[in-house]
Amino acid sequence: MSSAKSLALSSISSAFSFSTIRKIQTFSFSIPISSHTKTMNIAASSQQSQQPRAAVVVVVVPSLDSVETDKVTDETFRRYYSNTKRKGGNGGVSIVWFRNDLRVLDNEALFRAWMSSASILPVYCVDPRNFGTTHYFGFPKTGALRAQFLIECLADLKKNLMKRGLNLVIRHGKPEDILPSIAKAFGAHTIYAQKETCSEELLVERLVQKGLKGVSLPSEGSTSTSRNATNMKLELIWGTTMYHIDDLPFTPSSLPDIYTQFRKSVESKCAIRGCFKLPPSIGPLPNDDLGKIGGWGDVPSLDQLGVIYEEASHCALFHAKKGMCFVGGESAALGRVYEYFWKKDLLKVYKHTRNGMLGPDYSTKFSPWLAFGNVSPRFLYEEVKRYEKDRLANDSTYWVLFELIWRDYFRFISIKYGNSIFHLGGPREVQGRWSQDLNLLERRTYRIVCSFLVRDMGIDWRMGAEWFETCLLDYDPCSNYGNWTYGAGVGNDPREDRYFSIPKQAQNYDPDGEYVAYWLPELRKLPKDKRNFPQGMSYIRKIVPLKFSKPNHGDSHTKSTSRRK
Image 1: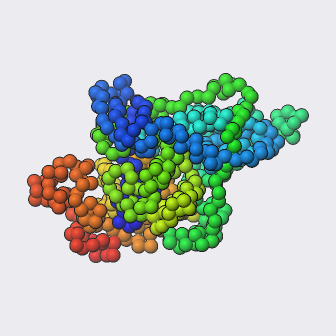
Image 2 (image 1 turned 120 degrees about the vertical axis):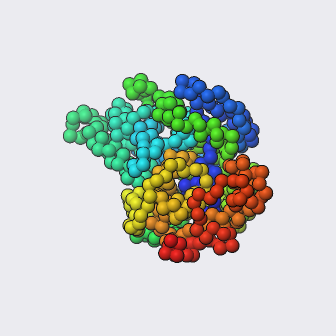
Image 3 (image 1 turned 180 degrees about the horizontal axis):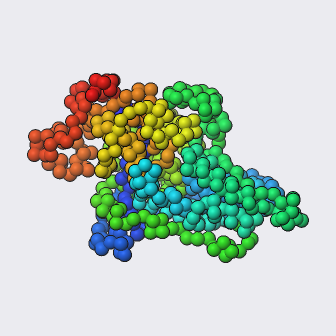
């Protein structure tokens, strides 16, 4: 997580994507990436909306054109090629079930499948439950922002697999229905997949395992009804964190409740494992006809994902005029790492610029690609170390790793506390009174939003967390709910009653009012020193009195709740 005064928009526990919530909500078009800024047509489906097309200019992240992106991707893969000989195990077919690990480089599930089998069948399931509604307040679980990013991720994953002798089966439906039937059709001995930690994902894992129990793989010379037939298995592999769960100096149940204690312990006692390497070709595919399972399937459209154009189009047309457009996929992720670390040489100043407000380059903005597994934390670690060796090591290069440890911490916390991270009282089981009267969460800064809603307005923090689940491009349950419990005082913050004075934050990080004027253009006509405090300047009057609102009062987290009532 970034510093206590950071104006982070991202749900990730780091400064990696302070503006990812502002990705353009694109609808029925493709994005040709060819320069730093792009002109594109933003429009809802003509069958859903009669609004005219609006040509707008947006900043694309990364800003590399398609030729440079492909060049960077190919060069990165070459650095990670291996001459390892395939063991093949007992031969046969294995399935790689892609989940939130939509990449080829440093994917242990893919590596294990390649090592243990004669052929591999990659599969992605478009689970309708991911496009339903949130548990308490019924918001869409996946908004148009993240849905479009997913589409781009799948298209890129399919492309990169095909370059290496494979392809990607895409199916719409529940994994527990799809995977056992595909495994049976191809006689697959194992399904390899990344292990998850939260309840909904764990339930799917159990259901897939249950479904596979009814599917047997005949032993050589036997039939499927023979006593020698063996059940197909699901092998789940840890791959979401920089520090591997098996290398921690404590079990997840005894994880320290304070981040600093966790960080110091893993930094002093743990080593970070190296990335998994594969040869240039990781085929072949199974010899069986794909027609018996309906073919490869296509990358879905937003309409097929169930995104409601009517609800999204107004926001898209408004926000398309501002902010940035993040391109999904492993190729874009590797391009952004190259662009930020090597081409623009910004890593050396990261710690000093990470609390910026506007533009694409004040922070790494890696978190969308981390959330979808387009890039692994271990790869980022190795790139930081390569930068430190070739160019410079300083507090900024370390701070990127510091933020990645925050991300690890929330992932492990989700194991320790389970579903309590989603409950009103949080892991600490705090008894409190919150209101559920919230109409709309505006796109402001993550911690400021949390502090304002919970501390100033008394809003149920779960409402904010679920709305962020809808809107955030870099959403993942561990970081999102971990951050909200932390900010609401029901999680693992050693300062249980942390409060951010919005005027103080504005004075520190937006002294000229450029950020607020960017999103509220009406303020630009005011003097810079009045933009954050426009009362009495023919502007709307203050609606919610802010506690300790005068800038010279400082951050008010040092005060107790009773003093602020």
